[in-house]
Length: 148
Length: 174
Figure (tube, chains in turn blue, cyan):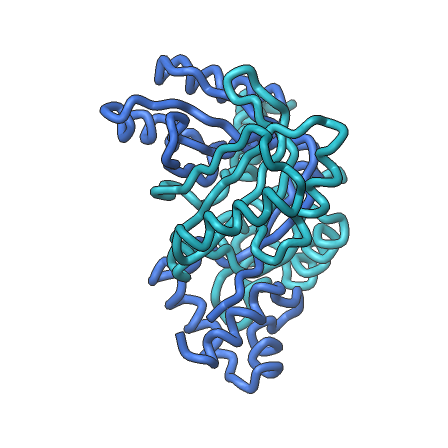
């Protein structure tokens, strides 16, 4: 990554302004032009460096509920189970990890009751246990990588 | 904070991301019948209320070269969790730290994430974190990620919006 792009990435990690011309503002701060900022973000999305460009939500502030789930999936069934789990729109970032508990995903839903419903559905569909590990406290919020 | 149906409409559209055009908030408004000023006012209010943490990038760490991503868990006596978490958070390589409820099948209550480029330095950092927080000798597991299948974020607002629409359709005239 070019130094100029790194600088843009760092700046964007802090969030863009909610103003009429946010890309123009960021561009002005960095001495770039507006079109270049938007084009670079578009390219990062295409390259898969970014999964999304937009807001980060705090679901719990809205009375919603979030939990982390773990499953021990037999290796032979891994892809099939992953497809079943990922088909639920409430499931976010699902990771395969190296452990007997090899599937780890987050469920975010409107309420704790909805989470229970999703977990019950996944257990029924996969015939595997879902270990529900709700958060009791978050100590540290965000990952700002040391870019470069 | 109570969301109005118009807020919900806006948030559901934002789950696809912000349009990459010179006036993204105007473009967003065009898709849900609001003008730019209304979109900006609503989003600022949602930011102030903390419903939106910030507008920006959702990074895929692996693509930045952070391929060694470890979730580290310990089973820490409840009275010591807070102090241990405080120490972990102060370490520059710890990126997230949570306390979670123990489960009979997974009796760990303190979680942290360490992202790195290579495994061996990450494992050294796990040991360093364990020592720094005084967690030696306690049950611990280190789980490296192998793959990430889905990092899109849950479709939270569009799910609520759609269920409201269905409810409205099911009760015509109500």
